[in-house]
Length: 455
Ligand code: BES
Ligand code: MN
Image 1 (cartoon, helix red, strand yellow):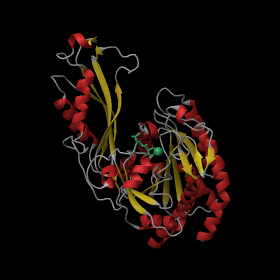
Image 2: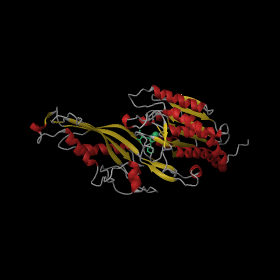
Image 3: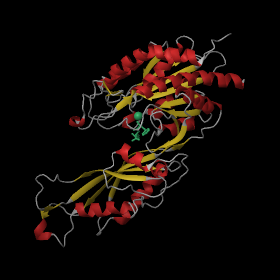
Image 4: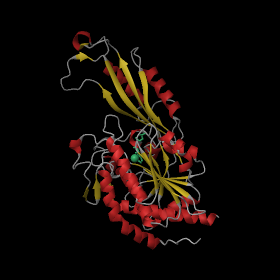
């Protein structure tokens, strides 16, 4: 059987042609507030799965909405032409809650363009990931050179609790040679990247009680400890004087191939003038391959209306990012034992886990990675992609690695340093989005070529 030969120019023209429709469908998805967190109206997640299913049916895929006790995921398949490889395309259709609405400059669920960026919750993370997959499928029309399995999950932002079950239940349907995870980002505007490591995560709570009830702070203070002071002293032991994490037993590594210029990191993170960075070593190691620990929240009386009373109990939520190669169970045990050991003044630190997730390291070598690098370089007009780590977590990559050890896992995505994913005023750089769509299209063509060359 002869198959159509794809030229780069032809595929560029196809993406050019498809982009307006892709943009319109992206806006349609952004209007659906599908949030998988507890306490939100999950009927929107259902609608969002339906909308994704409709888009995939429009690409002539066999589509099913599946679930395993959690939110709905969408699986869409088209069989490979004889002898061609199969590529799994992952993205997620749920989004983060919007947080403090007063900080948004426009309605999070009404997409608007400003200065070349499309604003809206999920515009980047990760509805643009879904639409990059759809763009590539539309560019090929009926002549798709590879088999595809689209796997669009519905609870990534809420920890993907049922994803592992879903993957195992549908193992045979989703088995593939290449897995593209479009939920990461690029190195800078104009510079593409392949993500080759991600950190793991352990989120937990620690609670300290010093008193059976609140008491007058003047009458008893000085001899009787309050829980908030005890808790903050405990929390202060978690970093050393340089700001490195001081918990024994966490793994730390290095080896990034790029440096993050200090000014750039300051600017991109919005670090306030005069505030220094924390930790030691290269900045890329600090944010990608060393552990990080942040106090996310404290339950304590609000300052407004706080009486002169000793606080009897206080609780904090901690989040630890784990170095690639570390183990979440061991890391939690290390953290817990640190907290129990350092609780001051005879108090007991009660530690409970919220959730954890595996880190991963990807050996980005071989013909499919070469195909991806070639596709990126072409889509960015000759700018070679860099290998980056990511400080955030996509825990199920470890599950894919275990289930499909022979598959090449390409972690890509649309986020740029200004996307503000998870924050107010999330946005997508439309110029970069066009390149991502083209890159994925070229990638599918090159994956087919690489497999043919191998035969
Ligand atoms: N897309 C992110 C992961 C990511 C973060 C990629 C930063 C590139 C840069 C993903 O949606 C995410 O936020 N993951 C959670 C994982 C958690 C819910 C287990 C995270 O990192 O907090
Ligand atoms: Mn995401």
